[in-house]
View 1 (cartoon, one colour):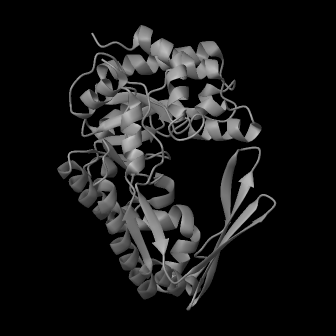
View 2: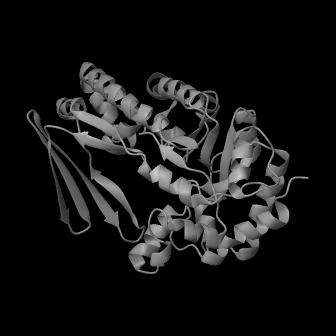
Length: 366
């Protein structure tokens, strides 16, 4: 079997010949690019396939949303000041802005100011979303299909669910909770508008020429909690996993944080794959606990913490860890090998390539 056949066999409920191994190289690639050490021939949306092939890493994740987003009647300006990037949205009912700060030591960005800082910003966000529209963009999916050559699958993103978009990007959990308390009616109106718009974007995504559809929630149990999940997030999950299945595609959720408290609930809402799960000792649940909570309802995709690809662990310890994962996965057929959550800056190419060597030696089903 090639890599694509292994993935699709697993997703369809069959047993491939070997445990599939697929990884997310994006963060590591960004660091290498920023340091000027990334090979240009392996950079770019399609060219990165060359890097996956060279390192023996199955391909599935591009972070691609197959639609264009337009906001009519809003003036949007971007300003850079050192490591800070500020995007300002000017509307007839007011102005909001967000600022992200690039962290050179982490090769990543963090919000220092959100679009929704308090309840006074709700009317502006309502205006923005009322004037937002989406149009399909499927060309990139077709290009990937033409270049995969059996090395993986094409996966596309819906937007996050509206509540998780607010939690992770537009407000942050603290600002969001205070705004909900200060103006509950305004929040519910904003949530209703966002839901309508996000369903339009999700419908476009489900219609894309892709194998898999991911809801990129970045879900973490200690941030969200059961009550908010059940009220504001789970209905979207149940609805859109059903629509993804009806379209003949496989549904993923990116669940890269703590698991206790939400794993059972998420596993019961129709997803084919829970992706980027991190087991103990880095995560908060052992493989056995994860298996019991999921109860065979979906595929668990992950297992190797991103930091393990760096010299924080020895070569011998890395080999032993991956061998133990493979041993567990061979007796728990709904588990497959992936990164939890991304291969980190500072990872060694030899360590990344080592996973394929270990899978080739220890990952065959009997």
